[in-house]
Figure: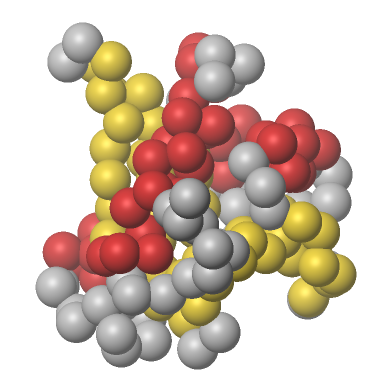
Length: 144
């Protein structure tokens, strides 16, 4: 996916990744940095019946955990990104012991913004030309 310009259009500088960048990012995710350290990252691959459908990335930042997701174009509009975010909202607070999630989205990527809003994230402002979406788990979540 990192070599597909349709997928990377809204990631970083919008360019495709060369092999060295792919290897560097993969090694960073596999390094096993403790989850409480800034920069710690984990990648999860979404599957449907043994077919990889997308990648969901969690990265520890000073202010919370940043989420990102990549879905190949042939699976766009099938709910894959939303399903990955749903799983992440369930897993990330426990895994990273945080209740703050962040997503940065290119303002031109309206579909990505919509999927985040449908999952309870809210547009918090703009940072470095990107829309910032925040999610904070309610302190009353799970209470009845």
